[in-house]
Image (tube, rainbow, N blue to C red; front, side):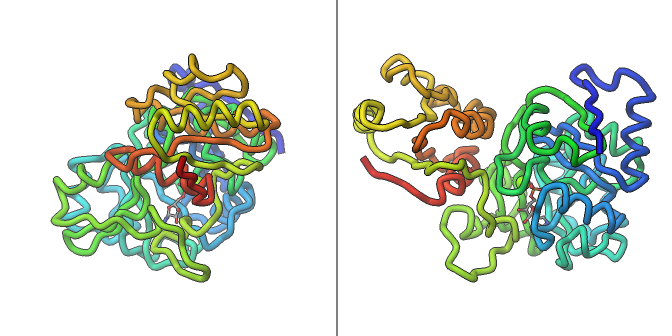
Amino acid sequence: MTTKVIDVKNGFQSQDDIKEAASILLAGGLVVFPTETVYGLGGDATNESSAQKIYAAKGRPSDNPLIIHIASPEEAEPYAVTSETYYRLAKAFMPGPLTVVLPRKESIPLRTTGGLQTVAVRCPSHPIARALIREAGIPIAAPSANLSGKPSPTCARHVIEDLSGRVDMILDGGNSEIGLESTIVALDGNRATLLRPGAITADALRCVCESVTVAPSVVAQLAENERPLSPGMKYKHYAPSVPFVLLKGSKNNILDFLKKEQKEKKCAILCYSEETAELENKNLVDIGKSENLDEQAKRLFTALRDADKLGVDIIYGHLPTTDGIGLALYNRMLRAAAHTILEV
Ligand code: AMP
Ligand code: MG
């Protein structure tokens, strides 16, 4: 299959482009589109064979459910059993980087939900994503547009690396604004369980929900055969091809350790901007200032992909704080490092 790449950094340049993208989806094909979180690999959520094609293109296990993307919160009605809390969350955070898990209606095939009786619903804020959903007139099932196990794509270059020849079209909208996938919550009345942390933080959710419990799989390693509430959490993810180790300790201890390692090993470092002047300028990947968690979120997946191409034997990074969006960074970095933390 040849993959058509269209530049939409300044919006859809012609009616023909948006019509072509929508008609690919309606005919059961696959279109990669930008969102404010990461790029999505889109297909018709109501079409079983589209879901099957998505799993095949990603090489993703078919028990890992897909999120359905709609243009406004009420559009969930034909596909999911909504609730008062859903609409209160929608009022506060949609359109935006929040996914809500709701009971499924029959119109969404089990193939899309990975066999679950629930469906995850999200209403993205990115204008290209919204225009595409509106034009197609269907909910778009879209996991992150990476090969299974690789970091989620935050620019078209990542998507092309992973999916060229496997999808019909890629819409290149430039760099993703947030850079980490959406926050996912499951609801029980007015109580929420945080299944995956993202830019909508636990504290922000607490302004709407009576209580917010963080699912154990967000910060802890699952025991063998343990079933997480969110199936995706059990899969190895974001992992570079060489060991990735997260360092914990004081600023000075970490710098001393890294300086020593640079002399003794072929290592790459996901370092803070202020450390670049202190370390040897070799295989450093700047992930932003230590205080700037938003910048680190934005750069993390590119940094992991770039570090993996340096031909080193080991990659080091900092164990992030769990405050605010830090919890999302912590969760992704922990999984990329297969929970390897070194205290120095
Ligand atoms: P991705 O689309 O790559 O961001 O991954 C989607 C994530 O959403 C996976 O980790 C899934 O496990 C999770 N997810 C999707 N649907 C559901 C659902 N019905 N219940 C719980 N988690 C879900
Ligand atoms: Mg993903």
